[in-house]
Image (cartoon, rainbow, N blue to C red; front, side, top):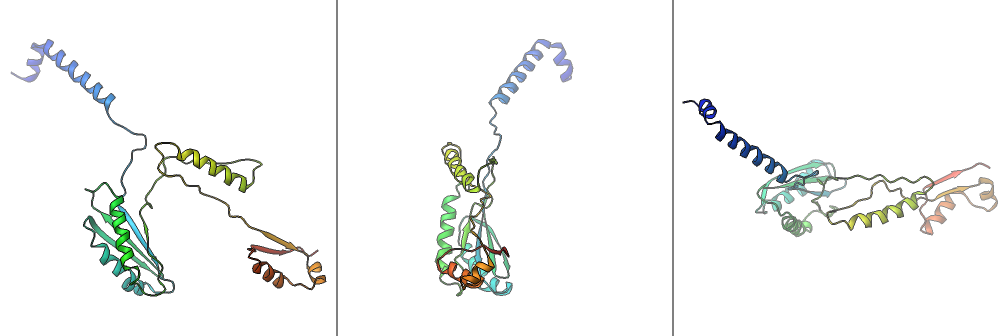
Length: 221
């Protein structure tokens, strides 16, 4: 007897089984865990070291290779890759997928990198371990304000950042696009001549007073 004939001849049982399946499916759908922005674990960190003026081959031999050797001592390591350019070494450290608690691993990586920092050649910067370069932002908020200066917008952004950090599920807040403060000096050539000053001497005086001069533009008036 085929399954179809059995279902037709015992239609009441068939309807009951079908109803149970539908109800179980609906309940599973309602209780299914889901997230609008599901989290994921980045198991890769970068060790960036600068060696100004050194060729790529020299960076590879004196910086990348020693860092790779000490990274291989990590018991959680999956594989390590390095990229050596003129003046910079980038070593990528990849951890096996079976590990989910990354903070202790990255702390151990930093200790190992610090242990060989003094053994690197002179002129090499302190290696920087970047374990959050893969972070993504679930929400990007744009801040504009007609009639406000950049300095005022910067202060408002700091206040908004403090509010966002008070939200329980907030991991990190960064402010991007901050305009650096600059001082522009405009001078009158004729007036400088009357005072016995030159543009170069004026720049020197300002530098000695620890004032950063961005632009010195002559008005020619």
